[in-house]
Length: 445
Image 1 (cartoon, rainbow, N blue to C red):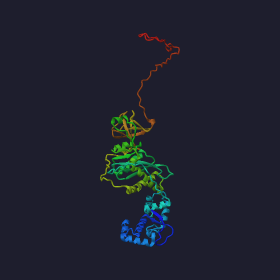
Image 2 (image 1 turned 180 degrees about the vertical axis):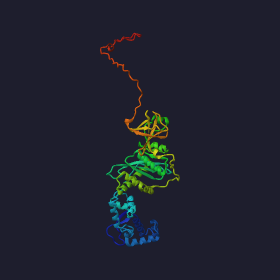
Image 3 (image 1 turned 30 degrees about the horizontal axis):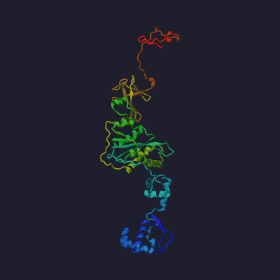
Image 4 (image 1 turned 30 degrees about the vertical axis):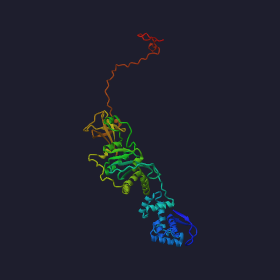
């Protein structure tokens, strides 16, 4: 903070106003007390927090030069650590050409890759001075911080983010992301929508890379949880209604915890903000405009760089992930399963397809018995009975042989008797007079 004051009459004469800081004004007041004889230099030094020698030198300069002697000698001079104006101009020009809209931290990282080494705080001050950057402050209501889980894999947050990832000229797509609550390690997958298949594929990648986590923290989308009433079979088995994704998690003993608000799973929500800043600009720099190309960038080291930069070691040393059992086929875990009824001709109908069960199966289901139809993520359809897949072949609708009950043939001599309808004037259609109840003797009035 500085003030404009008139120079004193002592010392050299100055014209106009002199800018002094609050510390310099405090020194002036203390030295004036010394000049009036109220204080000694020892008292002034103790008041200002200066040594006696430093206080004496400053007082002598004040007496020689007046108020101007208290002003710091480096004021108005160029700093020795200041960047070369040509370098500053080149960096700002490169920012305008390539990194327009980038934050100071990310822009400084990208500029360093090109040979323009600059601290992000210095770049931030330059951008603020040029009016090219303005930080957006967001205020939200108070929420108590939830402590991280101690073990890696104890809780993994999962959510999707819809955004114009390939630029405003392209359609929105969904980045599905998983992030560990204890370490911040993430894994991502780009899809057109937040579908069951996309979420299964991402969880499959996580299980193959790290193992089976204990729990998933998701929102209440119908991909993860459902509010439909339980079927009769579920009621008899004492099971809760599950989605196809929930059934896959149940096979691996992964608990699904549904959050009541986006702030509850704030770690993955904040990760979306990082991706919407860094991934969008990374795709723009590489000229990627497709979902397949985006997944190549994500799997090609982009997510690994984010993990290396933002991930932190867990509080607990033990890994909560469980290995995949040898008898478990993940392709048969991450699938969609439905129950279907076997017809009398051993045909199973599934999504307008007719699946003829072969007779040479070792365990053949009976007609009217239910089997499980399993559709894998690669499109393969399996018919499962008693835990074993059945051999079948797909047939056309015209080749289905309908099994009907035999009927007795009608004799040729039989004649069809016409249905007789009485005329409107028939006595049966006439209204009879009410004679009342003979037992009680009641009669119509």
